[in-house]
Length: 142
Image (cartoon, rainbow, N blue to C red; front, side):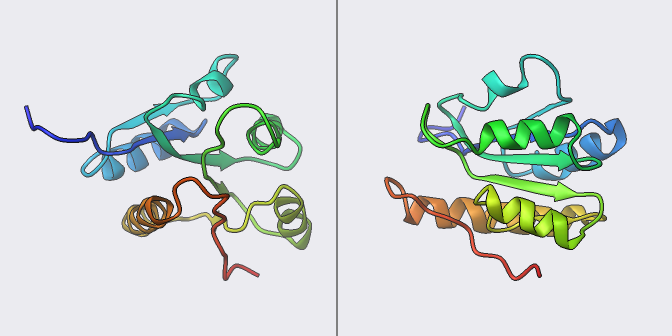
């Protein structure tokens, strides 16, 4: 077993089993990944101390994944973790809605696993630089 700090844990929330397995396999090469479908206990998983990033697959607007996103983005409460939503399709309403939730960046499917891995690496590196501050990711998605 290696000495030193453990790598940051990623919570991957995705209801589609094939997509979840694909992303878990790719990200799991570099990080511990907890991959789950949305259920009654998902929100509690978002507050694990070792958790550094949440990736959330979003389905049609105003379904359970969007409600979970709202809960994850509520101010106050336990320490917030960066959330990177992956949206099935992108409309101006989606962009406006995510901005209203202070989500600065999201990815639109299909997302290649290699792109997701690179984004995660950048997010975690950036969050280490901004520990203790209210760091937000900036997007070029418009």
